[in-house]
Image 1 (cartoon, rainbow, N blue to C red):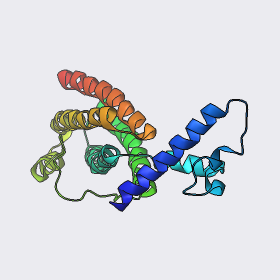
Image 2: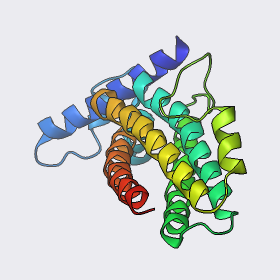
Image 3: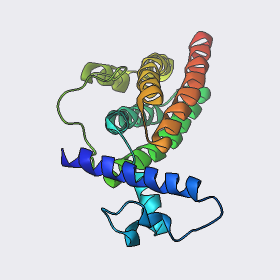
Length: 206
């Protein structure tokens, strides 16, 4: 309950600052903090405090998006590592795996940073199913496969994996509040839908 109260307070402060800024018109820059008194004029008149309030704005959808997407991305990186260690894998497939690692590694760090700044857990609490995640048997099959067969299995698994990520990202796009998280969800949809088509084309050529 305390986290929700703090989030609402930050939102209210940010809204009050924005409202005061709009109504003041010609530039009483140091006075808007005087309008709402519970947290004191000194904190609301500081530019850094309003930026902090804006950065802290998030809802449950934002937190769940990051908490679920982090392990989802982590598995995609692991799958890419597996295929990159194999011999005889067609070059377009290894190029794709390298790109997936380069895209999703930094996104994991970004989402972990958000959760920390929001005072949210960086791991999931309870059990939540994540679409597209590979089971232990799936990972063992990928680990055991070689050459072109490994490439085909990787592509088939990664298409399903991307489909799950896109579904999760679309949920965040419609239900999220934090602008950075919503933008990342849109970026994930765009990049992974394009990669899914690329993988389907690669599969057809193998």
